[in-house]
Image (cartoon, rainbow, N blue to C red; front, side):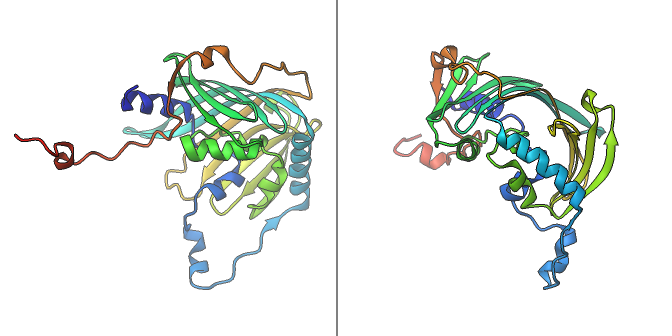
Amino acid sequence: MSRIENHILLAGLALITVVLLPARVGRAESSQQPSQAGKAKGAPAAAPKLEPKAMAVLQAMGQRLAAAHTLTFTALSTEESPSRHGPPLAYTTLSDVTLQRPDKLRVITAADGPASEFYYDGKTMMAFAPAENLVAVADAPPTINAALKAAYESAAIYFPFTDVLVADPYKDLADELRLAFSIGQSHVVGGTTTDMVAIATDRVFAQVWIGADDKLPRLVRAVYLDDPARLRHEIEFSAWKLDGPVSADAFGSSRATGATRIEFARPDPSPPVAVGKARKGKTQ
């Protein structure tokens, strides 16, 4: 398998390396924001402004997700990207997700680009490109949290809905919050009544719509504070099913197992080989 084919497959399998809920973003990378200039000069950090009503809504959502043994949902993600004409273009990803705590995950994704499938069964993780019939397989840690981290670090595979998959969604979100306030209710998002909450870390500002009755996330819109273009990132959740039956063979694929194997690695381009080294021992 050529290096170019490796790069094409893994670039598709990486999906959208954007996190729409901000807890993961703060941990994934660090950069000083303009608003943090005072901190560098020794000024005291501003105290978080966390409205109790908003935090209660977020906590109820986190507890509902964490308590479910199985989760299935559909996630429609939209990411804006700059265009040469000025206004941004939007790229979408549609994922059907099946989760079984504590150690099983399946993500089947169609996108504005290569389709991909990801399987994790508690022992191995497998990234499959069905159109190319290529698969990357690697040993995996025994928990979903650790497997998600390993998939990102080893192959740049990341899902924009990661924060609803982790073992404790509320803790992962709350640990990074600097701002949270209630906006009110919507009666049009997700076909139900939702509580609207605005949240922010040092890097991201987001608005979240959460079911008033079922406590499940329905929509998230986010902007990165260090992005001068203020590009928007959105994820819409639908078809939620909690604690439903899941087939024992849901977290693997016979087709993927039989595909051509390639290395489970990041799609980062390799540095060019120096001409002198490439031709070492050869005469002109």
